[in-house]
Image 1 (tube, rainbow, N blue to C red):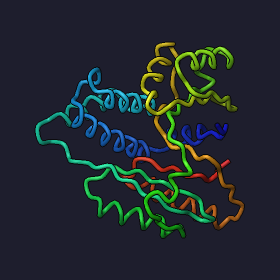
Image 2 (cartoon, one colour):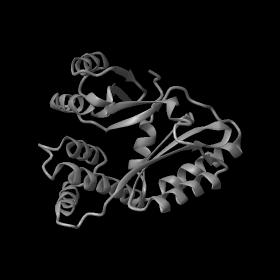
Image 3 (cartoon, rainbow, N blue to C red):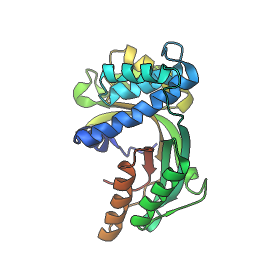
Image 4 (cartoon, helix red, strand yellow):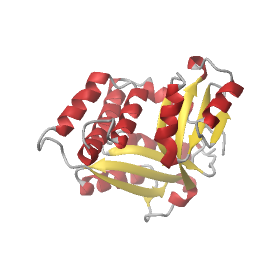
Amino acid sequence: MSGHSKFANIKHKKEKNDAAKGKIFTIIGREIAVAVKEGGPDPANNFKLATVIAKAKANNVPNDTIERGIKKAAGEGSAVNYEYTSYEGYGPNGIAVIVDCLTDNKNRTAANVRAAFSKGGGAIGTPGCVSFMFDKKGQIYIDKEDCPMDADTLMMTVLDCGAEDFNEEDDCYEILTDPDEFDKIREAIEKEGLTLASAEVTKIPQNYVDLTDENAIKCINRILDLLDAEDDVQAVYHNWNED
């Protein structure tokens, strides 16, 4: 797999202001609501909820916020009915973009996502138009500053846990897993006493596209910023090489 890393971008997002933190809490809150509705409030018996909780902790969501979200979602008739929906499209120079959403109003979400693409000179495409360019993988990052093991020891440890691949970056280690094995492997790695900087099932581009034109870079950043500000958007994947 490519050694391209999102780790610096992940750290940057975690260091943003309170508004950005509020967006993370919104994303996690909606995922908790869906997980509880589908499998109940006990993470020991709800694998999906356990995964969302792990994601929440990796994003520094306080435990009491997580617990309130679970209780709220478990309350009779208190949870809003959210639906997953996804959009695919193109940014400048054919940059492939996938937008995953969790919404209680698909019409509103579709209009807002379409507007974000349009304002950045991009366009929404048909379902499947770019998803074939991405591989779905479990992706775990461990910050080198928080890792007591050297690279070789860590690599053998995570491969023994069932990971598919291991990459060393400048400031972190990247671990890739089969998405269906992600939860099991994440738990096995945590049991080794390792602190995870990020852990999620994501979509990784098979190839990345470089942009040199300043206007094209401005446009793709415009699209990504607008999508990031949209509450219904849970995740955005693209194949622009931001390095």
